[in-house]
Image 1 (cartoon, rainbow, N blue to C red):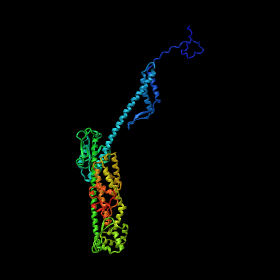
Image 2 (cartoon, one colour):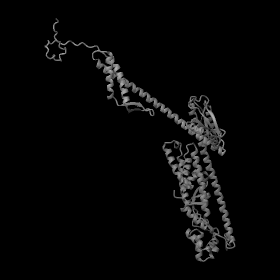
Image 3 (cartoon, rainbow, N blue to C red):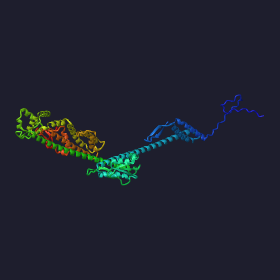
Amino acid sequence: MTPAVTPQAPTDSAFPPIAGGTQAAVTAPPVAQPEPVSEHHGFLSDLLHAVGDVFGGPKNVQRVNPQTGAIESVPASTRQRIAGGVASAVRGAAAGAAERGPGAVGRAALAGVQSADQARAIQQQALSRQSENVRQTNAAEMEKQQVQANLAKMSQDQARGALDLKIEGKKLDEHQTALANSMQEILNIPGAKLLQHFDSNDEINSHLETVGPLLSKQYAIDLAKNNIRLVQNPKGGFDAVEVPKTAGEQPIGEGKKLLTPIIDPKTNKLTLKSDTADPSMTWDKFQQWNGNSFSAYNAAQEQAQKIKDQEQQRLTAKAAATKDYAEAGKATIEGKVAAQNAGLDVNGGSLGTGATVSVPTANGATTGVNQEYLKTLAPGAQSLVTEIGTGKMALDRMTYLLSRNPGLAIQVARAFPDFDSSKVQSYSKTYNDFTSGKASTALNAGGTALSHLHELSNLNTVSSHIPGSPDYARYKNKAVTLATELAKFYGDSTIPAIQKIEDSLTSQLPGTRQAAIETQAQSMGDKFDSFEQQWKNAAPSAAYQAPMPNVTLRALQARAALDPAFKGRFATSTNPQTGERRMTTDGGQTWHPAPAQ
């Protein structure tokens, strides 16, 4: 019979003996042998730990802004966090999986951290390279767009200028023709083709109607993108040329010339300097260079034409002043004839009883008086007639008396034959206009402008052409002030008129400033002469030929400095009647008070 087996207590002493059983002898537990670790199990464990760390990882990610190239930190989505974390964990776990033996877990963790740091460093370097690439690409694209925009505007300006010349029937000069030929070289760009030639807006409209709205719209898009360029034709009008995309970025090759407008030191005229272009220069930049030269040359020609027009205006004004003077002389003769027909012998003939004698007047000049006739008048009448005839009566009182007493006017004309009573009313109006009216405003502005024009001439130095320099600022400020004064002098104080004058005085082209200043001084001088002739003609006699008001000696000296022709008429002397120091013009025929020096 098989003996009974006593139950074996569990080897783990942590468990109590089975109830009711016999207490077995306690034996030492067996020494636990290290269980073989599966490599697959260790790698998977590390990987799961890494995945668990994702949710405690970074909440932001870095990326490159595709517009600016800046590296920006943006919030990461849950998917990005998990994906990025898993990728880092995989790299860290993979690095740690190779670590085995004592301390393997610690070494695995360290290896994982180092692997993640290296990955971040590599990622940062990649971001930096991407950022720099974006910045360089954006800069290159910006420069390209700027060139394209300049070319697009330039082509439109050339088209407008070409149509204007065609309408006005003008031809290009030799320099403009050379520039237009250089612009025509756009047809040499590989793949470029001439679409159409235009001589007027009507031709443009007709062509667009012919091709229809769809193609017209495409033309507009291509013009905006600079794939169609408008270039001035040397024979007149302009050509529309289609240029393939990116063709403008191709090199021009050998044999091309860059043209630059300069002042010829020998002739002092605008000409073109020709330089050989770099063969590696792109077609776009080549066209931009010569297009800018075309614009600069045309601007210079326009400025020269403005100066020419001003000179023509001056000559016209001078001719008008001469005509006014002749008509005034004719009116004086007709007035004397009318007086004689009315029974007045203004030259002291039959109606007088003797010849005239010279007597001084209130303004220091002399006039003739018929003494014998004057003595025939009553004492009170003699006094009034003498006061009026010698210019010693106040203007308002004289005008009042002569308008109320026609007989008194006849008496003055008989006693003082050179007194023209028909001018009394108009002289009063002229006097008020020149002392307090519109003419006064113009003369005051003109006198000030002449002085400032002379100062501007002195400020016109080489350094005043350099923007940003102190001399440039001084010249510019003086020119702005002067433009307003000149506009007021010419009676047109509108903003466009002021701007036009300012532009003519602030040209940057060599020599044009001084020419504009001197031409302006001559034009002002002609207008001053016209004012002065009007002032002199209005006087009833020499006794009332007072100095024209609101014109100072300083202004006249400035005019003499800028106008050689006027300088010959300008002199200072002493009044032979009073000893007073005076300034004279026109050979001493006109007197002006000279302020103390």
